[in-house]
Image: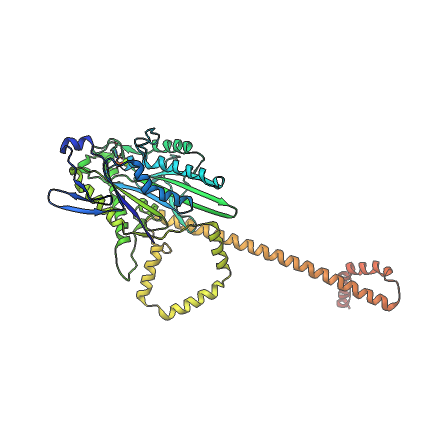
Length: 483
Ligand SMILES: Nc1ncnc2c1ncn2[C@@H]1O[C@H](COP(=O)(O)OP(=O)(O)OP(=O)(O)O)[C@@H](O)[C@H]1O
Ligand SMILES: [Mg+2]
């Protein structure tokens, strides 16, 4: 079990904050992992895996937060980096830098560094030829998932299956072969993103943006696939502070709602209720559903809590830091999934007699189950997604589609197995026929030897008999019945 890596990042003061409070900041460094944050009355100490103070180089954030996850993804481990914080706190800047194509090496954000890092690592590896990288980019805007590489796909469904885990059904995936090509494509996706102006941020992200890299390595029959996801969340905002109205207000309400759903998921994952399986409300928003595999699932995850160091934003900063402190307690079970693993599992399952096994388990359960245990099992199955109560017609439809495709594939497998059996029976039949015919020939040779005549002279009669025998049999039977 590994924990989520959580870091805090304080951006430099902006001009508006300087106008109000001068150079005053509300944080005091203790060391590279902890600090004290003070308001007029109280002070609070926080500890994280790393704290990036105002002016920290972007390269430090990349090396500490992103590089280990990137290396994992190259080896088939899923990984995610999430930026969280109030509007204007520096989430997009941390990911993109001043712009994704910016020349200034020092200011480069995590995203272009990850792209360069991936291609650099592949170039240096012995198996460069075996890697492929695919790129997808979507945003969750007003609770709809939109494909930023193809705007006609504006309501992409989030689905789940055993092999892929949570996935975006039908989202565009672009094969990228160089760092420059990947950046160019990302740039076109970013241009399609929903951005607006609020009093807190001239260029505020009005959607949650998800960058998804699928890194595949194929060596002989073994195929490893690691996903690396970067998430630029839209910022939480106090609508009175951002002076949002009209469309911007509607956006803010939807953003706040999905962020509080994310908070509820984190709370559920970290709340201790001994002996009772906890329901995790992943299905309460598109954001939490999409992040289901990333938070508390099979993923190495890092959370960057972005904050303003200004006393004017202390309550928002405290709220972001508390969110991060809570997330630090989430545990994940991370493992590599490869095609070889899947094959071995399948073979193991096939060698067992399923009916007998089920009957044995059921018999045991009958002796032990109480109403309370059944309730707990129901809760556990709901948690695992084996059982669920749909919130909407859409969810019901997507589950129905999953079940249908599973049924079709199991029927196809059964058909393949039956065809193989028929082929085997056909071969056995041919062997038996050959055996029968050679036995008949031997018998005829014996008869001929006994009668002393030439065997060869009998061959035409034997052949004739073979073909006429059924007819003769029918004819004699008919004659017998006429009599
Ligand atoms: N680390 C930083 N160094 C210098 N300037 C920064 C930094 N972080 C943020 N800024 C400045 O703050 C502004 C707002 O940052 P950014 O757009 O990243 O906020 P955000 O958290 O993404 O907000 P929103 O939730 O509204 O999208 C940027 O335009 C940038 O100029
Ligand atoms: Mg942003």
